[in-house]
Length: 149
Image 1 (cartoon, helix red, strand yellow):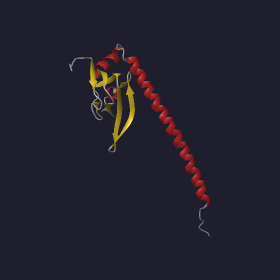
Image 2 (cartoon, rainbow, N blue to C red):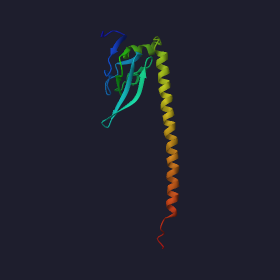
Image 3 (tube, one colour):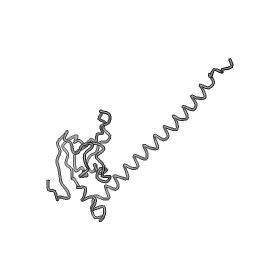
Image 4 (tube, one colour):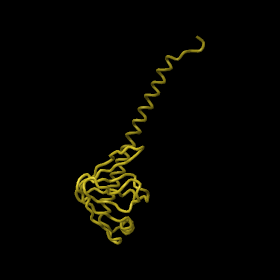
């Protein structure tokens, strides 16, 4: 792998790890063919949080935020990716001159919308639970034992 290459094509076998949770985000990955499972480990348990395939982009959040990777990427079958260096992406963002910017922006917007939908879902669920708890309190008050009895 040339240190100066802007793009690197890489092949992964089934079960091979593209990147691991906690790693530094040096690359974003564009899947040419194959599929990758995104896994997050928490409290000793590993959970699949996404499955991505041809045309999808992954690993961009760690590159854009300069934070460690929040999940691992594992090839689910023979998979070929294009890896874009973090500095190449940053320069492209500054100069607006990389063909990947439009799909990357679309991917980020999609993830934001999904996160927003999830937040709305949990807000509604919370309000419903809050109403149920208030109703249970009212029901319990009917059976309250008065001290003057």
